[in-house]
Image (cartoon, rainbow, N blue to C red; front, side, top):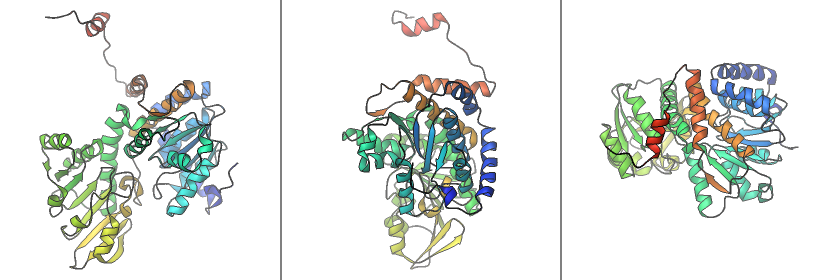
Length: 426
């Protein structure tokens, strides 16, 4: 049993938070048909009986539906946040009230408290991990090697985390199997494109109360998240500039009709800058010196490293909160640069952010759930990063289509033979 205090022991008005959190969870659950379908199977089969699942995710209502599903499937679930600003305290309290779930997640924690949450999760007898960004897995490998031998495997759901895990694998440091859920089509094509695009755009709008129409928006990175943002914001009548370091992605952005240029050229043109790269120093001192007065900077990547706020502080003569969730840095010449959510994940860390839409997370968390079950039911995977079996993707897609009342065609035997054969010609 962990000696770390859960959220229920560190907040006032716990009962009010529990009631409010449960309302949020119930609303999300009623609109997540994939997890509802899986719940019937998990309650019947109890695939996680005897397992202890350690979780580091964005703790909000949709995440709670997944965690309750895992608990209903027999697991003991212990959870903390994967970002200091993304936890909804009422949802965390509601989870902690579940006798099979312990929640250490709390909003607005310091860096030290954030890592204490990770340690609190690790203090349990974990057998599976569910991660967003890789901090939980990394802490296990760095500081708790003795606990790794009990772990069957895990899942990682974000681009940044998968990159970290692949680096660990290349160096021979990843000691148990992990599914790269981020790389599966059911995640990338919907969560990254539509989820990040819609939620980041909406969060920026609610935080600033600005219109997109007529503005020049610089999107840094044209991966799945970047292209989703560019597409969604174009629909709001904004002009899009894309910056890239990958020639193929840059060409793709160009062929989609966007302007493509280096950030040093885009810096003096943009009204809004959104980073989506998963890398550091995308916006730095060289760019801040060129930016126009009143620009908005937002990060839609996982960690708060894409906007170099240290450079910005060194260039600034003053800094103040001008609106909840917006910090204004004033430069020596009077120009003002506004940073949203302290440079953290904008779609989850601003005061009014709600994260991805419910339907999108139903798909992503459906993949997480079936991948966790696969890891337990088929414990033959070797240490390292593994692609998600395509049949799991197809199954979750079928559940989603069925819930939407959508039917599709199926191959006939003749068509299957044709695709498998090589003798057929004109």
